[in-house]
Image (tube, rainbow, N blue to C red; front, side, top):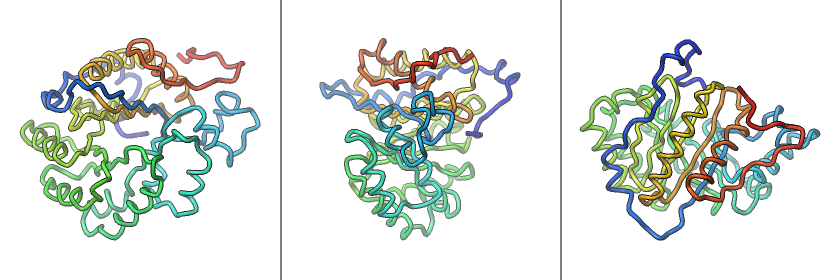
Amino acid sequence: MDFGKISKPELEKTDLSLKPDNIFNEKVLKNTLKAPIIKVGCPVWSVKEWNGKIYPNNAKTPDLLRLYSHQFNTIELNVTHYQIPSDEVINRWLDETTEDFTFCTKFPQVISHDKLLLNAEDLTDEFCRQILKLDHKLGLPFLQLAPYFTPKQLPILEKYLNQLPIKLKIAVEFRNEDWFSNTTVWQETLAMLNEMGHATVITDVAGRRDVVHQSLSVSKAFIRWIGNEHPSDYQRIDEWVQRIKGWLEEGLQELWLFVHINENINSPEMATYWIQQLNEHCELNIKAPRFQPKVEQMSLF
């Protein structure tokens, strides 16, 4: 993931601490007895370096999704950013994954980046129709807005979201700096998403600290965390775990967490550290990946 990527010298000078929570969070986090949904995964399932790590040494490409679904309970599905899945693909995904597995499908870039949400009704209908066929295995889909999609286009976003199927709730990722530089506009945006039942995406990346906005529009946290293969990764995770602990205590109902790190070779290790810390500090019972015996975990940097 190149968005917000910076050099190691720049990293050493960057404040990676989390911002305070947006005041809007108080509106959406309300104590409840309902057990939260906790999902942790990676952005890919096909990484050859995972053979002999979390996959058998001789694992073949056709088997990798099945193997992945036994290690994680969700996937950030970026392949749908480039192609709307066919019935054949949908059925294969359903057949090859465990019963509790979920796919967080990314909206096609032709809709979000090329058409900028305009005149995209037919494509959107097709995309929504297909992903809804995932049924109970459909997680929280997400719409990544183009970096040149600005607050001036908020009415376009609102109109687009209003055209989605009522039962389809998504998360929206904002990338243009202007969304966060104007507090009034950002609060209005959160209120609009809240009214429709849609979440925000929080992207924690070193080179764009504005997108780590700590703003929840509904009681769902969708976090895309990008590591740097640097000792500070562990400090960042530790701080996040305490923030999530507070959100859970205040009534967070869903956590969708996706662990990116460079070429994702070491994503399983970092995801394992995330899970270990969440289980310990938040009294959760998330299943961690099972590594092949020869792999020494947590000895990355």
